[in-house]
Image 1: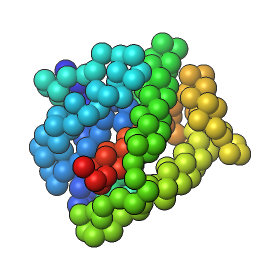
Image 2 (image 1 turned 135 degrees about the vertical axis):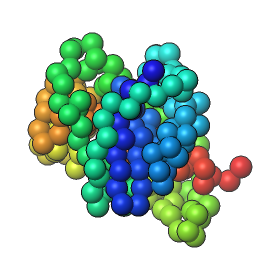
Image 3 (image 1 turned 90 degrees about the vertical axis):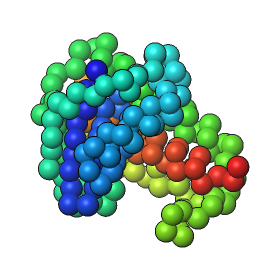
Image 4 (image 1 turned 60 degrees about the vertical axis):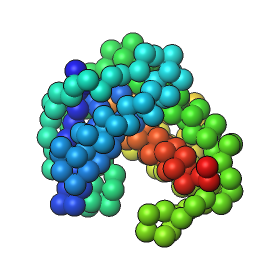
Length: 197
């Protein structure tokens, strides 16, 4: 069973795997969010394999926590920190989470390298082009690194090292890994979906 955290805002519900950072999808209801999470298992498998791990199966989900979201949830991003996020990370698990985040970055860079400069418009007729997405993702990483407790313009290597060391700032390490990986992977899938076929 895949452990899942449910975060519900006023407009959107997110289903996020606790142990597979970045595997997170939304829907209007909890049931829709879980169904979408299951549908994206093959796409998330690319990240798991890049990290050298056997991909998770969407054979069953165990909801371990349900959280009330906020304005960030309604904007379209998981934002609530679960009690499970505060559990101490043993070094092997911290390393595993860092490896999955590093794999997400590798997949992101590979998808960006193969994408056209100009992407198709999004579902509402807008959306950033490739280079704007890259700038947005990198800017978010810098902001997230500060919440993890890093100062200055932290590199991806420094972020991964911080996760491995168990560094915690305003965000616990497990939550930081999930939030960072979700943002990167969400934009991987956006670029893939908006690239001409």
